[in-house]
Every structure is written in structure tokens, then in C-alpha cells.
Length: 321
Image (cartoon, rainbow, N blue to C red; front, side):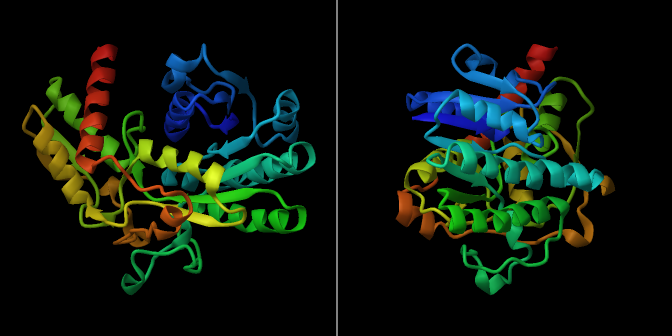
């Protein structure tokens, strides 16, 4: 297939580049001016990369005029909740307006392209315990974050374009995912990075936030495999969870990583890392719908994911040193 990935240099985007290259696809990607491309440095000679701003309509239009794409994966945007809270207007431009411009460009220039809009499980908000694992028909609650609001709004904005113009748009709702290349703002990656710094001689203290919340963690490499399967087999207009169906506590994630460490660490709670009133205590998603549509199921055990993440930080920090 000929595919286009927005946010190709990002965490999930770079893994999607790798997976699609392994499948023999012709891969194009977009990234913003000034963005670091270290995650795809090993692929830069093999893919076509276009630099520009997706909030400017002419940028993606120009890319779509260059090639006829079978599939377009929209991953670009602001993904870290605290970044979104610092700059709400910028977040809505990046996560909502750019998606609308993208769909309009597809409508007018490439209506045959299959689009996978990457949304988020955050759109569900707090889910009643008796409704877990949550299914795709669960109604959206009022969003508890700027990030969730932007993702929910883009999903709603996409539906009239699907209904009126027949665009083949599939909505992917990934739950928490981690693995190599994840920035250290996210919980698994910050634990792993701190542990490696201790192994390298830093003070043996690991700063943590909330540990009781439960999350449904997948490996990013499983998630991007799901994106490609949805492009080929997902029904237009439908939303699909990508998850494991099970949740673990943040404490369990921490314990697993600490047990893999080559050094002893002291755990200290850091008030600045606590989520406060907006914290959702348990999240897990049903995957029956995506399994029925595509056959996708997660394959990589969480322990391997965390080990690979820890080793990635070891390599990264040793190289820096």
C-alpha cells in the first residue's frame, strides 16, 4: 500500500513507520518544522518526509497532490495532557482544527483514501465500574481534560463528512500504550528513565505520582499493528478500541520496573506529579469489536514491553553520556 502518516516522527508514528515498512508499504510521513526526527533516523533514507504545519490547509493539500495514497493515518497532535492544559487554544488547533483540515483535503483531493483517525480512550471519561471493560457504544461523558475534549470533538466533526460525502474514515481509540521511544513525561517511561539514571550514578530516589489508579496498558507495537489492520478492514464511520481488556495498577508497573533494575531505589511521592480531582481510578477497554472486524489481539506481554522500554532508556542515556 501507499500510505501517509501524520506525526511520523512521534512515539506511535515512528513505530507505525517501522511496521508499515516491514509490510512492504510505500511510506510517506509529515512532521512539523523543527521537530526532532531521532525516532525515524533509521528510516529517513527509505521514506518520503514532508515538513509543514497541518493547521495550515494548503500543506496537506500539497502532499495529497503528490501521490495517491491508499491509507492515511492521522497521529499528529498534542498527546500529553499537561501540555494540553498549558495551551488550550493551541491544543484545539493541533488536535481538532488540523483534523478537520485533513478530512476536507481528503474529501476534495483524495476521497478514495482510507483514513484512520487516531482518537483516544480518554473520550469516554470516567466509566461506571459495572460498565468495564468499556465498549465503543458507551456515551461520551463531559470531557475531564482539554486533550479529551479535542479528541471527542474531532470524532463528532468527522461523522457528517462520513455520512454526507461517503469518506472512508475509521476511528481508533487506543488505551494507554507504552514502549521504546516514549517521552519521559508518561508514567511508564518516567519510571524507566529515573531507574536508568540511578543505575548510572544519580541519587537513588524515584519520584512518583498516583500509584493506585488502574490502566489498560498495551505495547505501542501492538497498537500500530492495529491501526494498519483497521485501515484495511475497519468499517467506515465505526470506532474501535485498541486495548488488552485488563487493567493493572500504576504500582504494579512501578514494581515490575524496579525489580528489573540493576540498582536499589527509594520511592518518594512528588506532589507535582499527582493528577488530583481529574484522576480516573480504573480504565480498561473491550476489544471484542476490533477482534471481530480484523482479528487483532494484543500479542506482546507487558513484562516484555517494560523490559524493552527500560533497555531503550539504557541505550539512549549511555549514548548521551
